[in-house]
Length: 324
Image (cartoon, rainbow, N blue to C red; front, side):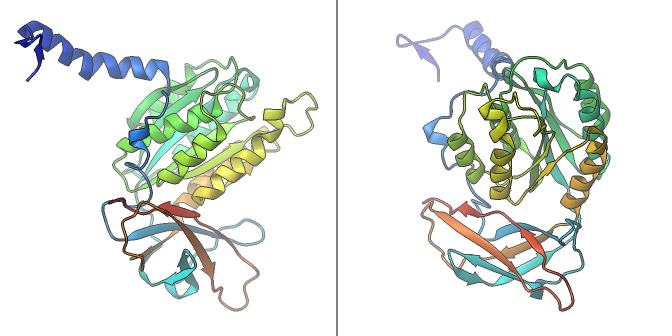
């Protein structure tokens, strides 16, 4: 019951407050971009499978030439949690529906690259299956949601066409806003794809914030990095951009694909799409049953079949255990 000074608010005032809460406030939040994190949120969306007993780990395997390795079996994998081997109880390599967020750099430095970047994004979307859903976050001086979850590739393409490259680079804010949107995803498998040409130089959030948010989110991070390493005029943040993205992606089991030529963007986008479709999913019931909210490290080791060259394994580095 809503009251003011011990009396009920007038009926019309109550209606007005409901309209603001349901419609006006979300719109203002979208325009304003990401807000400062609330302490009460710290573990509510954290980790993998907070409300179930099964931990799931997406795993990508590649050969020395970065080509996908498919056809492996459960016996080829071992999973360790905090150094203790876990029994793999479920194993799958099927293509499952994915919830994907595109994090699109529209800063001024992208002005001469944005057309190819749009083509790459569309090429990536074309690898989708009918049950996938997507949203679009664009960022320059600030990050904003350009399109909420949709299955329409045409809608996302249209939204990207009406954006203009200008301003500075709030990359970390873009990642944060993408992770916030992912809370409304309907699919269990989730990924963010960043398309950017440089490091952050205008975010409200810092690197430590984003690392913590990624640890709390069951979401893989991929990036197409259009880095010009020969540009001697790059800022410190721009020079640090490639390693920052790589470190963030590796935490989640994702990868960064450096782009040396703009013409390669569409092919790289297709490659990332295929990688997401050809991952192994390992499931185990943690041998540590305690719900203490602690960070638990994950390590996946590969027992490769004889005759294969050394293989690379990509998987998330850990998760938060459920709280009390």
